[in-house]
Image (cartoon, rainbow, N blue to C red):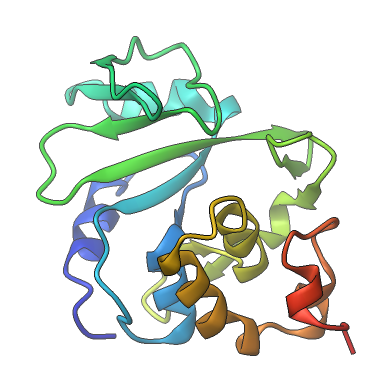
Amino acid sequence: MGACAPLPEVARLFSGYRGAWWIAGGWAVDLRVGHHRRPHSDVDVQLLARELPLLAQHFADRPVTVTDRRTSARHRWDGRTAPEPGRETLSPDGTSVPVELLVGESDGPDWVFHRGRRTRLPLAGLTRRTPGGLPYLTPELVLLFKARDRRPKDEADFRDLAPLLTPAQRAGPHPHPWADRLGPAD
């Protein structure tokens, strides 16, 4: 896949990390589609809140900044406190491209969507991999995250990704904000 310069840097950044992590957002769409489709302002990486101690250990020698999306206030992460889902993000300092760490909830074997906490997916089914082994989020989950704002770039991501969804991916997770546009799961 051409023009994916930041992804090898992110792979190096997480080399040796003992927790689960996935490329998310627009880059995950590019990885599924198979080519770089549009500019990206950062690389989103999904992690699990229950593995924050592993993240703190992995980044022990690199400061991590917490940013409040609403106020843009920034402070150093203490290595213990989970960011507020959907409001705060973590970013490791010193990368050539902004890397936004999105911390998700889980319950036993399930990933739990922070909006309403009713939507769940088996953690075992979240991972897709590039031929080189780079982990990225399953497409239906990427679209679930993108459905809230529906910015022009989210709409473009939906248009490019929706035709590639399998019937099972079209059927879940429930309720899916784009269900009316995904059509029936044949």
